[in-house]
Image 1 (cartoon, helix red, strand yellow):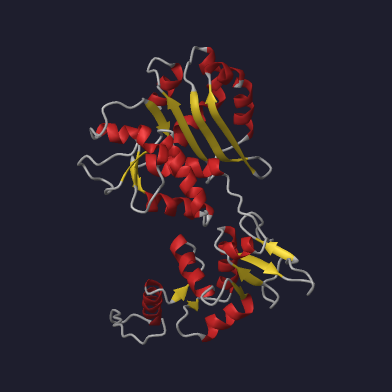
Image 2 (cartoon, rainbow, N blue to C red; image 1 turned 90 degrees about the horizontal axis):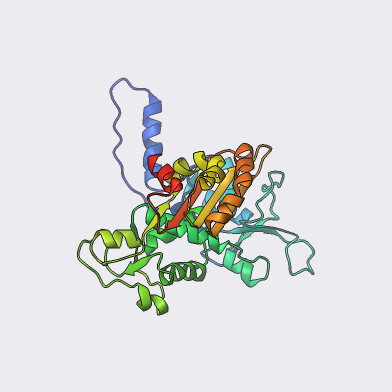
Length: 352
């Protein structure tokens, strides 16, 4: 921060200099005065963006290196390699874009990298030719278009809410942005509004966890709903559990680690389960980040699939199970409307 502060550091008698240095390092990290290759959270990048673009929506890498070395109010890099790691991670998460202008007569960069076009490892960032631009600045100049799949954003909004039964809109936005980088506010607003209008989520303007009945926005009242700061999103099941509504359509929802653990072992047998008489309509099934044997990932999404179609897809599920494998980022989101406890699929899911 550029301010002189006093901190007391104590070491046990007989200890060498290493514990003393480690305490200094821990204090610098706690105060945000030292940047390491671990500073890659949403909050870290938001703070860095404020520093980088304080004077405009573009800045050269050469100027950033100079500022880190000379400006007292800026944090210190733990080692030189941290700078390139942060630049690459920021592009990957959508917090800024990297570009290099070529011909002086051209209005477009010769090289441009953003969240969907990551920086190749062979690109040398040590020179003075590269600069950063904000995603908004790149879009205004016509250098990039924001292309985030709204279906994926929708599924992640549902996941953020269903894992707790409710969540503040700001918390949901943080979770989605942590995964995709900065999702345009209007895109997120459209997704949330659509979920509320379709009855998959309810809204109130109170506090998460409150027991007293709020003024819920759902049903016909949701037709003109527009998300606002302070909104709390609630699943219909949680609203019914608290006695806020008298009747909501039954649905079975699994997501995240629970969804992955329950559903993936059934993938090969889905066809046979439906051949045995399963009659559940799959409202939503999203299998994402399934790893392929020779590299790459696969995503499969099904919407409003009736039992007959699930039965016809049995061979596809068998082949899929034999090819893909679960990876660190693999996620499953499953939603079944009006589940029947006598359905073989529901029984399989509930006994896992």
